Length: 576
Ligand code: PEP
Ligand code: MG
Image (cartoon, rainbow, N blue to C red; front, side, top):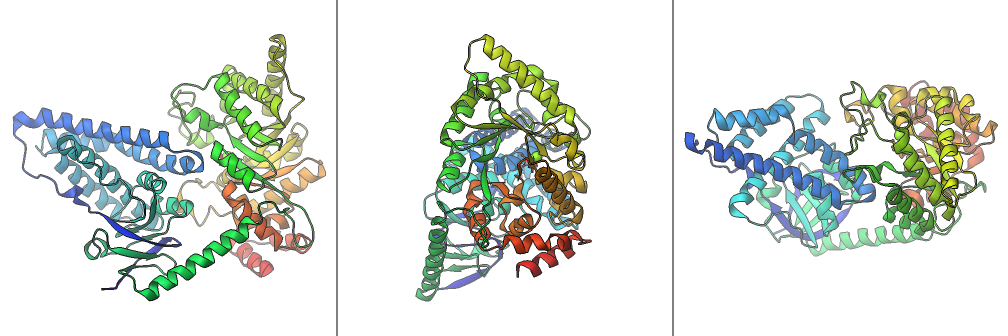
């Protein structure tokens, strides 16, 4: 019989598939107390399960590539941190050793304690962090259960299924999406959760808070997940299926319409050409950038080479990665950013200083590279060698003042001399550019432009530093807003100064690929956008509907806005 379950849309879209239930059976644990003689053995089991859970997260990290890796690694880091949390671990040990809890019961007890703390919080984002605790503990419990029963993990996806669960860990979602999962219905959770954010970027429809999902739906029930309306239909009728087919047709049409833009120029209604570049990390990004008609790579984040492995990548390993990138772009310009480690990106090789009080304000980006000239020179040599295969520009992250660019230029000069002595082929002079992501660099951009051949504005960090609001902290949503007048004025100033100095200025933060900001950025005078390649066609489509001259004329009005709300209202008015 047809039944409808209401929920909150966490990621839009529709999907039709068989239900696959993951019951939270993980909390059905043995509550009988341990005998004194069992304590040591059980403690060891607990530690093994914790280690298995850590290992699973490490393996998962190794399997994910490209943009997906970037998104998921953040969650994996959060979960790994929880697994190493001294307070959690000490609490578990005490429960087993002193309280004589079995490991499963100890895990459940700790979970309940932590959940109560999070649930008591007013902030919806912080409240939703309870899900992370749930997911981590259930991973350990499941590792514990496998030690005895060796049963296969329940989360082995079959193609064509919709997952019905209490919550799902982001890392598991990434894995399942690759294995053919169609959508997710979660009985708890919030649209603020890490999983919800990930579902949106994976284009995986997802409902959260579908309260009775686990008791109403059975394994293999046919489910129509309608995350457009915020409901899941169990045993859909012919009428439901017709609605689904019509949605599919529209979605396919929209997809095909966008696909026709792959080889089209990026041009506004009034005939102004705009350059669209891709942000890339891994080979699939490069393939996508090519197939969607990017004008080049505007940001190649090299730190991912350093985060993927234990030691430092060798010169040859780096050379091969950069050369393949250059070859992959078939003669289009490629912007290689030098290492941007530090803050939230700590490498396994231990370059990043541990224990800094404020790592986001610490030794990161070019500050770190200049602290380790030998490591930096290895990267510089690899870049110089790769640049013999096609046009390359070099971009320096986290520049604060001109002397950093001067120091980088000197290291490039020295590396050239070294390579020349070794009779290695050398490229023509490479353009050296600065990321503008530190407020001082933006405000003093004239001085920077005397030493930089081009600029790339990193709005992700620039916003965080201008607003003193951590870019990863969703609790600061109302402050971390790209429409903040202070940020808009700074963007406009940097773009104008770049034009005055006749040097290219691109923008490679997330807003570059967000069509909600395309009109704004054109109004501020930007004509080079760099974005995740999945966004290229959407932005090209948006630009084709905008009038450049009219938008430029509105810039003074936008720049007079006193609050981000005012800027938003103005923008809505201007773009109709
Ligand atoms: C930025 O800060 O806007 C940027 C593009 O760099 P990342 O996101 O790698 O810090
Ligand atoms: Mg940055």
